[in-house]
Amino acid sequence: MIKGTIFTKMVATYFFIIVSTLTMLGILLSFLLSNYFIYNKQMEMLVKATDISDLVKPFLVEKRDPGELIRLLNRADKNLGTEIWVIDRNGLALAASAGQKNHEGDLITPSDIIEMQQGKIVVRQGKSQIYRETVLWVIIPVKEGNRVIGGVIMYSPILGVTQTLLKVRNLFIYSAAVSILFSTVIVYVLSKYLTEPLQEMSQAAKRLASGDLTRRVLVKQGDEIGDLGEAFNDMADKIEKQEKMRRDFVADVSHELKTPLTNIQGFIEAMIDKKDKTPQDRERYLNILHLETMRLTRLVNELLDLSRLESGSLAVDKQVVEIREVIKNSIAKIKPTLEERGIKVTTEFPEHTINVLGNSDRLEQVITNLLDNANRFSPPEGKIRVRVVEHDQKVEVTVKDEGEGIPADDLPLIWERFYKVDKARSRDKGGTGLGLAIVKRIIESFGGEVKAASEFGQGTEIGFSLPVYRS
Image 1 (cartoon, rainbow, N blue to C red):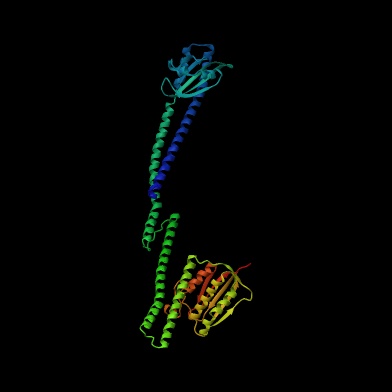
Image 2 (cartoon, helix red, strand yellow):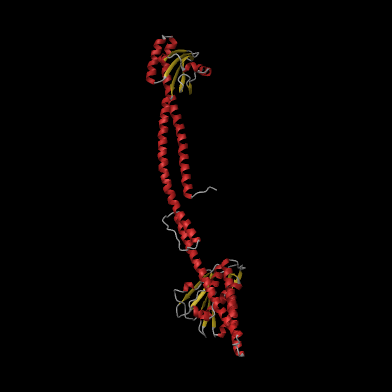
């Protein structure tokens, strides 16, 4: 694994890419320019050699004085900047510009002579053995009719081409150096721009891991880095909220457990101290102990149910359930409790069957929790209305009580664990603050939604909706 910061890796990577690209571009450009210049030089020499071959043809045919031919070659050499020789059919030099005796014509190969004798034009590039430099030369056959009577050799050092290429190469190197310097500055700034937010998020994540849940990052960019920063802040907000919920949960559980345990401890100590002197006192103490024990049992069971629902470890087998039968069974189970306070239940059901995909036991738990909640907050001799309505491929079930109602600010919070509008009164009524939280988790696990509506002093209506199952 390559170690180092992202900033270092980015700068090194960009620098390597820039240098590699410029190097390959320089090599390719040098190769193309070299071929271009040499090709143009060769074409120029071919044209000139062809023209000269027409001029020297009479000298070869009529075998004139070589001195006049040499003067002609000198003039051509001076004007063209090349070295020129005239050779006979067998490759022997007849005349040379500037009076040179040694020439490249002495070094041409037999295959070149054969090609010339066949009337072919010969083009060569190589190292001159006379001038110790790279030269270009061409051999143009001189013909009389269809017969080759000699040839013209023209050669030119490519020093000018080499110097031109060298100047172009130097100019490219200087330009590349400036480009690398400029690109490095841009890459440095860009890398800083990209990595500084990441470094800030890294530091914030470490602070978050160490317990500082208030740390956030400043989002300046509108790109993916900015989106990552916003996602980080959103995650930090949720972690902070979860941590607050955890602390509140521990505090609420501790508080809910403390009251019954304190009562149980107090009455047990009273019985140990023989304060239950009469059978009536003893029976009263035992009844209280029994109620507090049942309260603890209910609290623990609801905590376990809620924990399993939230973690997804509570396996629920879904099946087709007739919602009206579930409601009737739930009412029948809680009816004795309702009758103790004189509470009456009215129902409004459609006449046709309404099926949903769920679990009868869990749906009965939902209806029972809603009825129990309505019972605890309804006045004695009050009424509870259970209503079932089907619309838009959904069935809506609501339970309405005649209690005091819930303030508008508190209504969205009733689905939270241990939330109670009036904690003191809720405790007296035996509530744990978990019933509606369990209702919400169960209904959502079946693909439904919960709802609540209330007007303070006019009672509360709490319910849910589920998709209707069509076979």
